Image 1 (cartoon, helix red, strand yellow):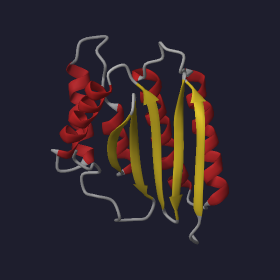
Image 2 (cartoon, rainbow, N blue to C red):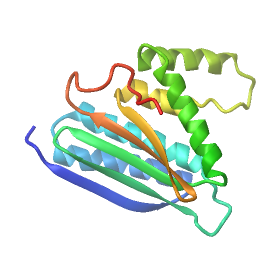
Image 3 (cartoon, helix red, strand yellow):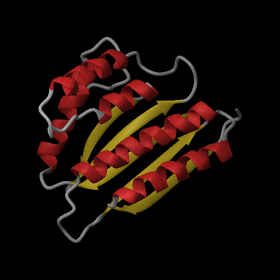
Image 4 (cartoon, rainbow, N blue to C red):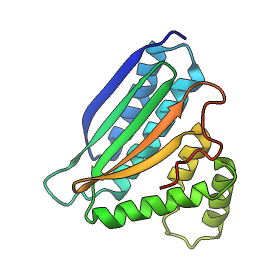
Length: 174
C-alpha cells in the first residue's frame, strides 16, 4: 500500500445507535482508502469499542451530550481517539490507567484478554465487565493511552496495520 494521510474528526451525539453507524462508516472509509480488509476491520473494531466505552462511561447529564471522535494517521499507522465528558475526570483517568497498567502486566495482550474473560465468567450478574480495553489491545495489538482534557477523558489507540510493528503487550503503561 502506498503512503497516504487521512483524518476523520467529528462530534458525535451520545446515542447507542451512532456506534453502529460510525463502525460501518469507518470501515467503509478505510476500505475506500486501502486494499487491506483486515486493516479496515481492525480500525473499525477499535473505533466501535472506544465509542461504546464513551457512551457507557461518559457523563451525559449536562447540556453537553456530544463527544469527539478522531481518526488520523499516515501510511500503515492509525490513531483512533475518543474524547467524552466525565463527572470526575481524575477518578475516570485513574480507573482507565489502572486497567491499562493491569493489561501491561501480562506478557501479551492475548493473555490479559483471556484473564479478563475468566474474571467476567466468575463475576456477579450485572457487574461491569471492563472487557473493552483488553479486547481492543488483544484484537488490534495496539498501544492504548489515556489523558485528561479539561472535564473530559481522551482514550487513544495507536494501531500499526503492518506486521510486527506493535508492542508485545499491546499497551503503553501509564
